[in-house]
Image 1: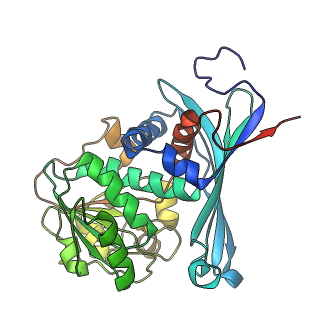
Image 2: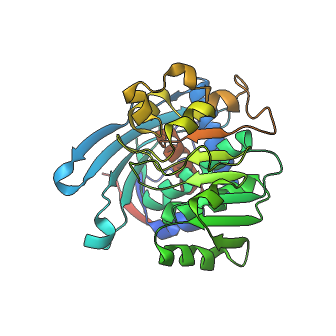
Amino acid sequence: MSNSLYSTARQDNQTTIVPSTDIEAAVEMADLVPAIEAAFAAYENDTAQMPPKSYIDLPQHNGDFRSMPAYLETDDWEASGIKWVNVHPDNPDEFDLPTVMGTLVYTDPESGFPLAVMDATTLTMKRTGAAAAVATDHLAIEDATSLGIIGAGVQSYTQLEAISQVRPIESVIVSDLDDDRVQRFIDTFGDEFDVRAGTIREAAQCDILSTVTPVEDPIVTLDDLGEHTHVNAMGADAEGKQELHTDVIREATLVIDDFEQTTHSGEINVPWSTGDIDESDIDAELGEIVVGNAPGRENLSGITVFDSTGLAIQDIAAARIVYESLGDDSGYRLEMV
């Protein structure tokens, strides 16, 4: 490698294979949240490249694949790579596998050398939580202490882990059709927070609400929400999915992560496709708020919504944290010949 300002690659011509256990240990939310915020800033400042997410639909298997490449440059570092990820909702029941799995190739921008191949399943969950935290930091009331979570699957855990980094969360209400999943969530966090099961409405009345479900029929109404609730709409990641009723989207201050992705497969994709909302209903992209080109929350009252589809820049920023944290004894090494 050359003496590039940004170069941090080990000079051993080896590719590190990083399993999920190493990623779990490597990624601290205190480091990840600001890295994801820096990624949003780079995207807004045009120092990132992120081609549209591409899909391979497999209806015969009730699933799909997505490819997500990106490059980004901040004041202090640059990073690049690509994530290959699936969504197969039948996996837990049929194959005892997660619904979402991924693999990420983290690559040196200067030489193109593949620095690491890492499991991206845990990485995806953590960067998704961190993105919600970035949005929450800019859009929730400053003294928010209550968090509602609808959907007690694996994504719900990183929502609480990340959001509690940016707000002094004390109480959590979790709602899910599966009582066992709710109990597992309570057992995990009950010693740290006041956690209890509740209805959708009870969760939606909290200062902050994260929705992490795969539903296609909206489950949260405008009347459910508190007068100043900030909503992280995280579940919709494909055409046809929608967690919030359209009147919520119309009435709220609406912030999105990326125009092309959200109109195609985000929370707003259904009302957008039917013409029930248009560009006038979108108030800002999160990157605009991060760099100060658009305001965040300005009033103590009023509902805000963050429509998150998940961006490749987030994955690459998270992968950089993993790679930089690896010691010589971490993962497995492949010699490049």
